[in-house]
Length: 160
Image (tube, rainbow, N blue to C red; front, top):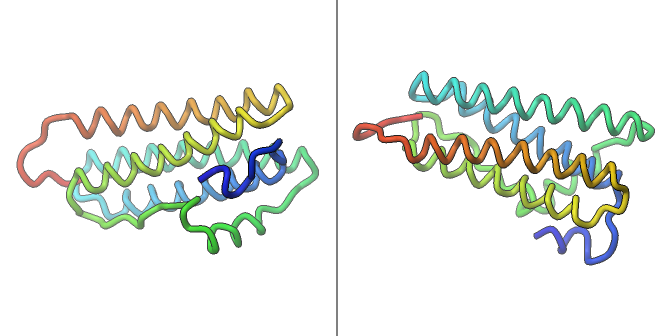
């Protein structure tokens, strides 16, 4: 997935930041939707927490973009519309089956981990590598949280 958008050479930091901004916006929207439509207090709390985490990441990325000269993320939004494989978020299906909702959220986190990790590998600036590795680490923490919740025993038709 990553190579089809960036090829095999060095990556452009500005484009990476803008794509990351779009990923975080979509993640935030996804978690907000699931929080509003959650079928349980546990699910709503988890999704609100994850929405807040994505909001923090978004703020950091926007500040980084401004520090680099206020680059616009508009082109990345256009890319998202034309390349849904890069931004594969399913809209929350409130009150849906617990495993389906958690599974979709886990796939969202995995896509972000893949993007940030590959970007960190390919970026040349050491501070850029550290930044994108840190973002991947945050998303890995979210994935672990979701995985633990997925494995948590629940009764019958539990909803998140």
